[in-house]
Image 1 (cartoon, rainbow, N blue to C red):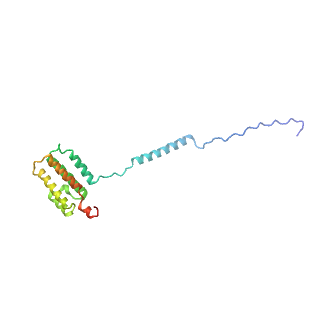
Image 2 (cartoon, rainbow, N blue to C red):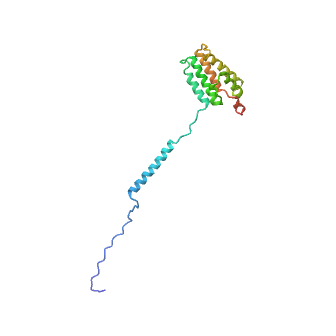
Image 3 (cartoon, one colour):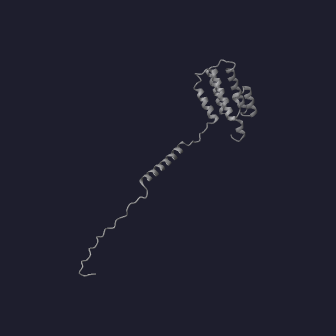
Length: 175
């Protein structure tokens, strides 16, 4: 180095820069991924909301009581002849659904015999059923003059038959 030569001008030093923000994915990819995630979450929520929940099926007793309650509201408005058919149908459908008998398609005599041989009701229940069917048949087929009081009596007998416990359940240990 030459002592007479001027000293080189030092290069100005630049300050150290901080880290550079660098995102490796383009913004359109991020937006597409977000939309797909939202679609999946929305589909899952929709599926869970629309999923069939188990439906509680009403028992034969609850269906019969509901039908008899509707009929109770119609006692005064319905002809006793038509009313006796409706009450009889409700009771026969109850026996069919609850005990597996073909009550709606049987005559009263066949119905009583089936109930007796299958021991669906006890002696008191069979007697009550026989009284119900006799009164109902007199109104329906013999065209016995009936009043709203007779309709209420039929309805009360039907409700007590639905309410009574069958013999089979009592023998099975239920008290």
